[in-house]
Image 1 (cartoon, protein in one colour):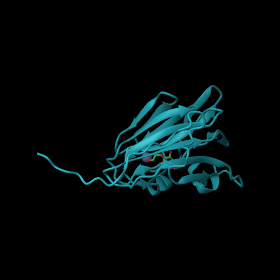
Image 2: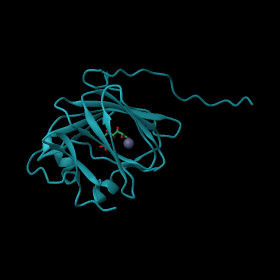
Image 3: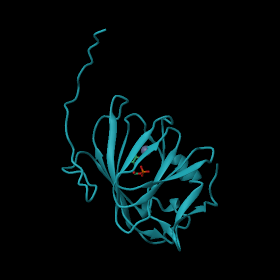
Length: 191
Ligand code: S6P
Ligand code: ZN
């Protein structure tokens, strides 16, 4: 069968700076999140602090199932009490939509959880490819002393459900222990 697809976009390149993770020239909107945008995410609130925690550099394409959305995240090093800086974390609104992360620079962990309370942790580092299947909420955590940068790609109609994580949290938090990162049960978690 010879079906023609209507062509609505032109091919293009975007360039990732492999040192910083930034995309330049800017290919889409830049999202910046500070502690004040996510104070409820930490086990203990950050008080009056308002540090810049991360930036998301987006490659702008229409958010439809025909397209693949992608971005880099630059997550700065730091802690709130003993909990490492992290992203807000989300489920995809269309729960079945998967996502791939690949590390660019720095070191960290990817915390994932299902709605029924299972969780998984994988490392993010240059060369690691993290596969996040549908149904797994995901939050990245910078456990190092340098910015953590990674590239993410996902089906364009996935959408972001932040509210479920804001209300229920993740089952565990990642905190700085004497020997390095440790998992701590989140007492406020609601399955
Ligand atoms: C999008 C993907 C990432 C995050 C980014 C920031 O599906 O998972 O690009 O958006 O790392 O995290 P968050 O939880 O604030 O969107
Ligand atoms: Zn996602």
